[in-house]
Amino acid sequence: MNRRDFLKAAGTNSAALAISGSGAVGATGRGQAPAIRTTAGTGITADVAVIGAGVFGGWTALCLREMGHSVVLIDQYGPGNSKSSSGGEVRGMRAAYGDREYYTRWAIAAMEQWKIREAEFGTKLYFESGVLGVSRTQPAQTVRSIFDRLKFPYEVLTREELTKRWPQIATEDSAEVVGFYQPRGGTLKAHASCVAVASAFQKKGGRFVLAKASLAPTSQGRLQRVRLSSGETVSAGTFIFAAGPWLLTMFPELLDRKLRVAKSGHGMVGVPPELSRDYSYPVLPNTNAMLPNVDGLGLAVMMTVGTTPVDPDTHDRVPTPEAKAEVLARTAQWFPALKGQPFINAHVCQLDSTVDANFIVDRHPGFDDVWIAGGGSDHGFKFGPVTGDYVAHRVVGRDTQPELAPIFRIKSQTFDVTASRNPAVPALIE
Image 1 (cartoon, rainbow, N blue to C red):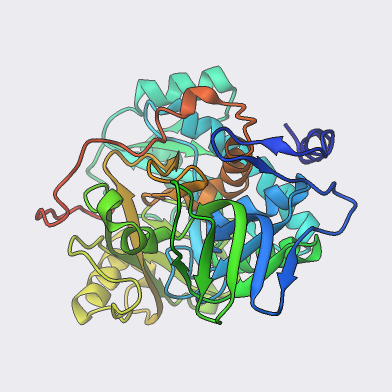
Image 2: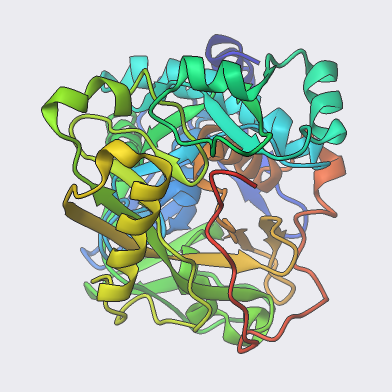
C-alpha cells in the first residue's frame, strides 16, 4: 500500500475504534484538532499515550495521529537521543532475512515508505546504494526463492565481476568468492529520522512531552495513568510502551529473561578526499559489516556486539582502545587503501534483543490497556514506517496481518542473559 492509499484508508473511519478488553480509542478525524486535554495544569488526557520516541514509538505515534487519534508521545531524553537504541548517525537497510519472509516483505515495503516519507519531511534520510554480500558459497537458495517470489531484484556475481565493479574491496585473490548484490537497500540516517518523525507528529497535532514516565497505581487490571518527572500525570485509554532497552527496567518481572540489553554501535573511519567517491554513497554499497560514507560522516564499521548486560542510563558510550583497534584493523583488511586512516567518531548504543530475534508487539498480560512494542534485535530500525503502521492498527483492533500476532507475542521461552557468548561482527566474506 502506498502512502496515498494508506492515508485514504486511515481517514475513512473517524469514529471511535474499539479495542478488545480496554474500552475504546477515540478518534478526532484527520482534519480536526486532537482531543488532548489538560486538567489544572497537572493532568494530560488523550486517547493514546506512547512512551518512547525511538523508531518504534515515534512511528507508532505518528501513524495513530494520522488515523485521527489524540496522542501524547513521551520520552525522557528526546527523540532518537544518544542513550537510546535508535540514536547515532546511521543504520543499514537490507531485505535478506533467511527464511523469515515476513521481514523481507516488511523491508521491501519500508524501502518505498522511507522514500515517500523523506519527501514529505523535506530531508534526506534514505541513501540507496544497494547491499553487497560476499561469500565462499552460493547465496542461500531460501533467500533467492523468496526474492524471486516477491520479484525483488538481485544479482549473483563472480569474483571477477566483483573486482571489476568494486575494486576498492579486497576479495582475496586466492579465494573463490561469490557476490550477492541487491540494488535496493543501503543506509538510513538514525537520529535525524527520529527527529523528523517527532517533528511531523507535532505538526499534525500530536503532543510531545520531554519527561520520564513512571507507572502509576492501577486498579482492576488497568494502568489508567502514568506519572511524569515534570509532576504531571498522563491518563489515556491505551498506553503503548515502546521504550527500547528501558522496557527491561520498566517491566523486569515480565521481560527479565526475554530481553538482552548489551553494547553495540559503529566506529567511523575517515575517508581522504581523493578516495571519497569510491567509499561514499552512491558508489559503495552497504556490505552489512560496513556502511558507506554519507554526508561526510565517514565509513561506518560495525563494532563487536557485547554480551555483558548494560544499563542504558549509565553505561559508558566511549569505545575501548581494543574496539577502536579492531575497527581500524578490519577496515585495512577489507579496504586496503584506507589503511592508516583515522578513527574519527563512534556511535555506541545498545541492542535490545529478544529470545528469537523477533519483535515484541503484544498486550501486557497484566493490563488490559497496556501494549508493549520493542525488541528491535539489531534489525528493527529499518522497518520504522511499516512497524509503526502495524502497531497502530493492532492497537486499535484493525489488525491487517493476524498471522504475525503469534510471532510477535511475548514469548514464554527464556534465555540466560548472563550466558557467555562472543558473537562475531558480520564478516565481509562469510
